[in-house]
Image (cartoon, rainbow over all chains, first blue to last red; front, side, top):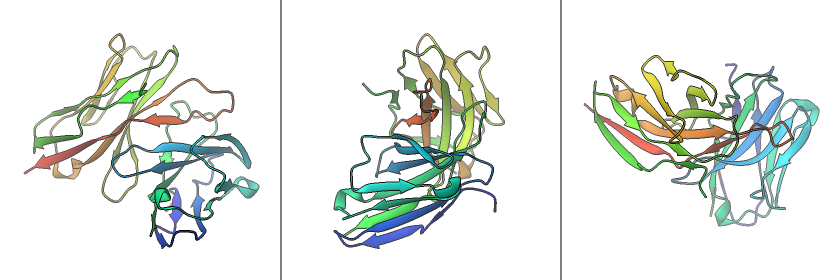
Length: 115
Length: 118
């Protein structure tokens, strides 16, 4: 499978715990995005990496959220001290350098439930 | 103001019939791109079709076509010959000019849930 891979697919945690999600983009893609999708809404942009550099962060990304992309390959999104409002689907997407349309290739998402 | 507006929370269509999903957008950039994605219950966002703001002709991809009316700022998706497997959420999205960081992020609407009736 050469698509975008995300794990875990589902995570249930108690309020106050830390969680980490991993995204493996398509191998030749240098751009990587994290989105959050809550029930009944479209995906909302969280952050963007070009290679290993985090170049853009949404105001939605509070101090409890941190994302990394060491060596420009896989990426992790960590949420510290989770709150019930963090319950959502976290989607990762990637795109190649210089791609004409800007189409994003999405993974299947990681669904977080905070109890 | 919403950048992408999808006014139909849910739509029903008979199998083999055509259906139009509405999308209006708001931007002041002369260069932008419009996308439609399908999201089945599995969660993955599947790219369907793209229309660039300078494209003279409406985009088509198999059973999908995009009715692009630039002056009205609308980009409706038309699905012809609906199939049961078309039942899913459909999202309209827009890419505007680069903010400088090179992100070309997409802004999504709230989606339309399409149900195909046998």
